[in-house]
Length: 314
Image (cartoon, rainbow, N blue to C red; front, top):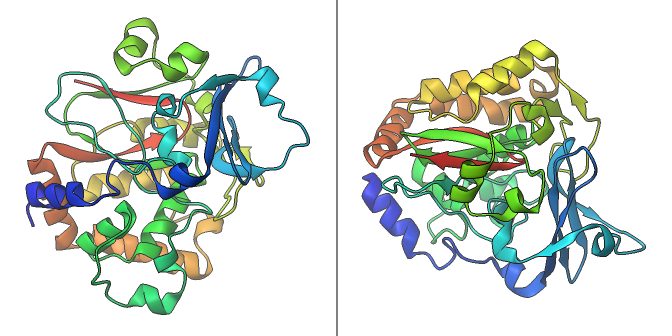
């Protein structure tokens, strides 16, 4: 399937680039919250719970219970549209892709969610091993059908990145990608053109969670968050926020940011089996064809921080 046909089919689904059922039925309000000398983040209220993150420790969305709504005094209420890439992190909006032909700066967001938000079709191994013939209900399911890698394995892959406060993105293959710390309400919610005109990209990406890991596999919260050593962090900076146009370049970047073949947390039990399937796919001729089709449409893949705002500019 050509990239054009793949994208045209994707755009035909009612859930594509649209509010999720969760947003339609549960969303109440959103708030920008910032502690002194820290990056800001968003907090989302729903009918059922309060969801927040813990910058810079973890950007896995945590479901929390508070006795008092402290954010009403300490935060600033924002519209759901102002959340940008965080809409997808919170499960409020389905995935969207930047326009590769645009000459206007655009926000880049992750397209695969890991952590505790798991799609129901992948809940058990038996269903996971069967070929899915029905129309997909999420982007992860659509990608799974397209590349022949099960949805569960893509979820595990997303969890791997999520535990390093990173996410998988599809980006235009040309241009520049930078992450901006959410130092105040303006940079958190302004349009991308305003942000790049008035602010400098983040230099210390640890402030946006890069180089801090909790190995919070499929759970919310901060776990045992800790910083990686400086040499590893420097490797991470070289691998993220850049267009990767081949499976080999993605494999190399993944090795730099996660050390997934050497770190004990990711080289044991069933998790290693799942990740080996991802490596096998990326080493296959099918992956090369898929990356070639993506590039023919003007796109590449990238690894981006979950924290801050990540903006592509031509």
